[in-house]
Length: 438
Image (cartoon, rainbow, N blue to C red):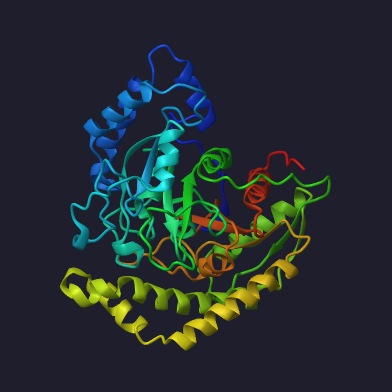
């Protein structure tokens, strides 16, 4: 089977747009209870094999529904079911960070993101699977498109839950590529806001220079609705009346891309040109590749500082893969880490200069289709966007030679999160063959 483009915003069954769903549940005569009971039934029916949720207790969800029915006001997420990664603290459910070392851990309070979601009326239906401490040990979660392929890491459960139609939106985190890569492998939208756009209080730290909360969904507008709840970042004005300017590149070496990925990327470029976009080669692949190298160094250094106490105190409680990673990261000295930090800072300024006048830079989200389940896949093509601290979004715009999803990543500019969502919606419409709004 050859690679091809596909429709990006395939609607999850029974889930209308989040804003409209909340309005219907607010205005309905029966309240959100019957609808959420159907959601619980669907999770019970489908998650036994998928294993997107590490913790799902219907009785806890029902208590949340009772609490919700006492809330008033025009809540933007009233009754909307969400999943959140088991790296994000919740006071009413255990948060175990994907590790046996924290089995049964019950946080004293919600993470700020969870608190905001609840205050907006959302119902957290369960904690989704994370890899061990959000690193590289393969998860128990299966890829909804092929049970023998990985859903990615580390936000595997959140991506799979959205892809399988269990929830319309789910939260994940990204330190290297843990939102964009699973989104690509599972065929959904994955949005990584700019660094510190969403408050990380109450989210388990891995590498503080890069840790970022992100979102999975099926509609760009759903991501925007939830982002408005999670962040106080101002929304920038939309573009003036001109063709959108897009630069396309491989994010590194074109020869490293898997079968079909380059074809999907080139196909997207042709569709955008047909739709009236100004499209050119990015000439940024070298910069992005260098950023990925330095991000990997600094992330390893910081991850060892964060998880070193666990390694020293309970090495038997860590997987062999994690122990090996931390032991190798221990060799990264402070001088080398500072050097990586300085280079990244310099390249962040260079990025802003070189992308001036562009609406987005397009690169692959991953090297190809999801690999075998013994791996979480390679995050390299997402590392640069994380290092830059800019918003990035993976769009499910292609399929590979085996019929599995291939995502395309849009990189934006600092403090342009809502603007990048605008651009993403326009790109989807262009690739899907619909009208392009300018």
